[in-house]
Length: 631
Image (cartoon, rainbow, N blue to C red):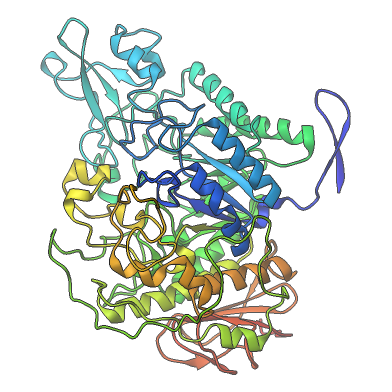
């Protein structure tokens, strides 16, 4: 512990020397797909509140909530119409306050998703701009510009939106004539804000303080490398790069140097609140930049606390590739004094079970989406499997409020680890992805989870990851809601498949996600095979993904070698990645398919699959406690 003097009162405030965010494990809640409390088929804040004991039981340190602000939902809340309220679809401010009260009681941190790059076209500011004159103060909050060509009929520059099509839309002026164009790097319903206008920064100061005053523990910042554009808005040498990659590639629209001033100011706002009560507020950015060195610039000591390191998520399933991205992160990001923020899944990416299972490749990166059938036609059906034995006991989705995880000791015994994580249940019948791909993807996903939890720094888990959910790749066209599909007509890289509502219990949709005689169907249809992944079954089956994550999280919380710190690479067999944490915690992953000698003798402390002493099977990760000194 140490003391800091309050900036206004001069009183000393006691601060924890261990900064909670540096090695926290945060669970991403995609609110509309987590749990529905009202029966309308859409998850809500009351559902999140009901699920907090489940998350406490899992062992995470906090939750990140996807946007729940008033919004026309053109991009499921990332088009914000009011940053200081709750959309009635998800509840109200009173329900949010109840959620915060329960989270504090359970010791669960709460992060909100804030969207400063753009707002909704229904935001009062944009509605004011539409009726204002060119050159007005109202239009200066956005990027309005005259068009090029005869009568201004062509966009002001050649940029394309990340979601397809031109990044400019033309408005009709109040006199009925074609008017100026406005910039939107995503959809026309998401106009980009002009951060060169001080009024925009002042508004977000108010937004930050509104939610900090309600007790939130920090913010996940959407498009944190955005906000500022090149001041002259020139043509891009590769205008379709963002749409082609679905990433922030255009060097004129992203990663401008002025954005760092915003994060320095936001950090000072958080530090102001920390000085009041000694509790640190976290800023974690969605930062997509070309190199780990550029990434590190966002997490300097006076900017963001953390930024998601997506290179691990996009790395191909290959030991050398993982070694490279981990080494770069440890050198460049951890070298700033921050910690690396690891992530394998999120609401924009194909789930690891599917991504790692693509046959015929070693790739796991963000290339073309997994093969999907045309609407109404299914891919090869997996053979029918005997369902895994789930036993008769073992819990419900929700533990009693405040209940601690059920195992009696933080240090899982080797015997328990071996017996708990035998071969995981195979893919269920009816799945449209071929059986070998599912089995391979599941094994690799389990191994990747143990690898991530063993790395120094923080980790983020996306809802359903702890259940081993695969991507739903065969949603029919008529239920797809992703604006990428609406704008391009292509299913490549669409995101609906990872956003299907969670299965909680039962044998048929809605699987406990929504309840009541008159309840609506879930907003995206759940496939029948979700029954095999339901939370009640996962809790009862000690071989499940859920138990692997829970055991890994318990060990991470209890072992001094894990969490924040350094790693030391081991010399290993080809295709095997191994490292040591602290005083003898060894983690190794076999990226191949054939067994190889384990880097440590003896039975593992925890493994992602069956792992006999001295052997590391293919597509398997394991942890050992050892006095290994192999450099």
